[in-house]
Image 1: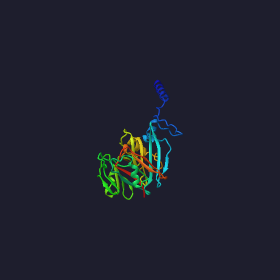
Image 2: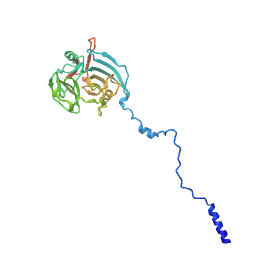
Image 3: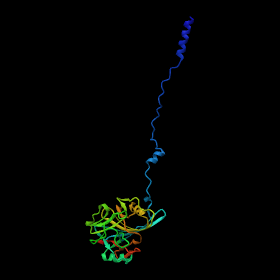
Image 4: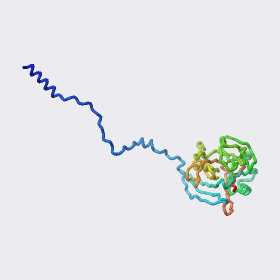
Length: 290
């Protein structure tokens, strides 16, 4: 009997022992009603790049436009950036109505005001100083004026492009130029804008008056002066959308600035306006009606 009672006791104890728990399953959270917001790190990674310095350019005066003889236009205004302001003068023209002409000026004693007589002689409605010249007052690089060739073609870090006229004006880089085909040509540089983008690596320290020429990739052209500006700033200005009124710069080339910078234009009423340089220059670029 005692043996039977012991067996019954052990059986009852075994029945009271709870079963082993089933393996735990990961808790399933309910689906969120709205998508989760990205983390600060994800936001920073997806944020657009900060605007370049060029976006800080702003026009701080109205665009003051004047019609010129033959349907060209003069535009004058001021541009601001950070602590600086720059006066810009532009002459805009259509190459279907105007030719570009290289005007040789071989008299080394003539002075900066010679631009007026040179433009009159070419019947130009506007013009700007041209390329560089040597201490001997010879063109630096090749110059072709009315078919006459002076100097020799050069390719160096300064002379990186050329204004070339064949059947129409072109703004070309050195590798694209065939001097034998040109009726008018002047070498200059450095390049400022290529494909609508400011050229990298330009000097950002020396401020001076700059003269330049630009094209929109089609028939629209401009020549101009900008005062107290570095080459790097000028390139960024020209490449910034909206800062050239009704004009999108595709290519731009620096001309011989500094003391050589000069601009001439003739308004519809026949009046001549000249902003002469301080020094004699060897050649000019004139805008001549077709």
